[in-house]
Image (cartoon, rainbow, N blue to C red; front, side, top):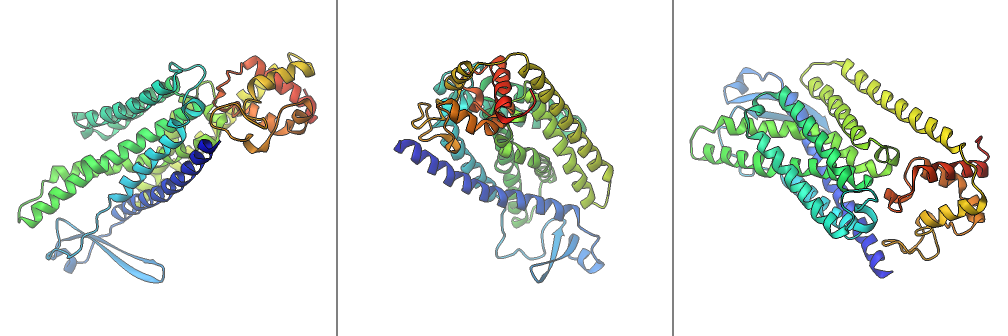
Amino acid sequence: MIETYVIDWLSLIVRWLHLITGIAWIGASLHFIWLDNSLQEPPEWKKEVGIKGDIWSIHGGGIYEFNKYHLAPPSWPATLHWSMWEAYTTWITGSFLIIAVYYLQAQSYLVGPDNWISDPGSAIWASLGYLCLGLLGYELALRTPLKHHSGLFAVAVVIYLTVLSWLSVQLFSDRAAYLHVGALMGTIMAGNVFLGIIPAQRAFVKAVEAGNEPDASLAGFAKLRSTHNNYFTLPVLFCMISNHYPFLYGHQYNWIVLVYMMSVMAYARHFFNLRHRGEVKPAILIQAFVAFLILAVYLGYERYEQVDRESSAHELTDQRALEIVHQHCTVCHAENPTFSGFAAAPGGVLLNSLADINTSAARMRVAIVSNYMPLGNVTGMTTSERSDLLGFLDTQTGLPE
């Protein structure tokens, strides 16, 4: 269908632009955090002109000198570069990407079989409400005394994101749930730039140009928001690529897995922030790595031990296996898919007959055991059907039952 073809191109273009702008924003953010944390004590002659710290760097065949002033330089520069459009364009392209993939194809990607919302239109409104109210909750928290206690605020943010992660899997398909948590954090990050960092910087410049003392509290508040963005960076990147890993978002307790992964990533980021300030604590990275291993081992043991136990419980006949495949798979994997959003069989895999199933048995098993297929489980494949079909596929691939 021409409509599906257009949507495919639209999502490709917007995803490409989102990736480019995201690299620019995150790259600039990480660079400035490194720069600020790596500043050295300047020589006396620099201190006399108001320089707080400096650092020398080499890149691309050139030597660079970075200076940070306590307030402003003795003479105002003719051109002052602002770092904001990277954030804005990343958020804008991300919003278009959600529209192209999840709103225009809501029945296929946004709605899940066992969620609170089954109507695509209602799911779109729920998505918008989720993002707006999630941002509002964060902004309200920033206006409480809790912001003055970094440790307590970090705990509060983890609890807040845990609740929102749980809510996302109730409202949206598993794949869309992870994406929405990432989109919410990205919205918070862009909001930090638009609502806090840039206004504080504009007030700073205006005060200096007028010969007045800048409001130190505004600068401190902007710095706090920038620090939050720094710790959000790795979790957001994980959410961006999470749709490739259904063994995570398809887990029974996927929201706990998500919070666990994001917490470990933020903790790993803490190592680099400390390192830039001269505090090298490799134990942080080791602990983060061990935490990843614990999750990987647990999920692997739980998933494959359960599948191996259940897949041997029933032996499917060829006819029954074909019935399950026709009910849950051939809506997409057919010459002319009947499922909305697909003009051709994904990956060119056709599953119309037993011969087709035998040919693609190995690929089917990987997709089914990881909960990747059916996509978002929109057809409502039961655990029993999944286990029985896996047992049947094992006989086709030669794996021990």
